[in-house]
Length: 256
Image 1: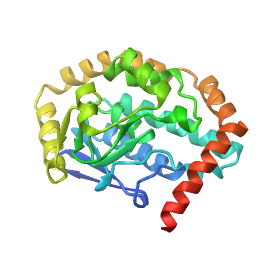
Image 2: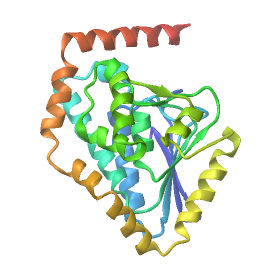
Image 3: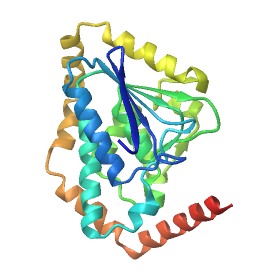
Image 4: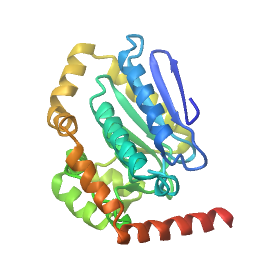
C-alpha cells in the first residue's frame, strides 16, 4: 500500500489515509481503499473498521489537480471506482467509525457519511459537500446518502449552495456525532467501535444492513447513466474553467 496505512489491532482494522499533506484522492488511492475494505469485510478476525486521516486533514476530497489531467477513459474508470468504493463502504457489514482528523470536504465527507459513526477533531475545520460550486453534478445516490443522516430538506439546501460546516455546526445538524480534541480522537473512535462490537454480531450486522437497504440498492443498480451525467458536465468548458481556477489557486498556495 502506497497511499494508505492499514493494520489490525485487537480485532479492529485501522485504515489511515496517507497521501501527501491533504490526503487528496486519486485512482490508485481509491483502488487501495477498495482492497482494504474488501479485506476487512472478508477476514473473520476483523470485527470493525476505523477510518482516519492525518492531523489537520481527514481528506480534502478528490485530487482535482491529478483528475484534471486524466483522459476520457481514465476519468470514466475513476468515477466507476469511486462509486464502487462508496457502495462497498455503505454495505460494509461490520461496524465502521470515521475519525475525522481535520478538513473533510466533498469526497472526504462522502467517505465519512458511509460510516456508522463520525467523530471530528475540534478546530477551524470544515466538512460538507461542495461539489456544485466546483461544477460537479451531484447524483441522486449521493443526495440520498447525505439525506440519510441530515434529512432530505437539509441535504437539498446544503447541496445546492455547496455549504460547508464547522465541527460544531456539523454536530448540531447531525452530520457528525461527536467533536473531541485531536489528541482524543483515536481513543474515542476505539471506545465507540468496541461498544458496537459487544453486541451479538449477526443481530447487529443484519440490523445495519436492513436500515441501509435502500441506500445499498441506490448504489447497486447500473451506474452508467449516473457516471455519464457527471462526465458530460466534467468536460463542459464552464466546469473545466472553474476547476482550472481552483487548481491555479491550489498550485499558488503550494508555492507560497
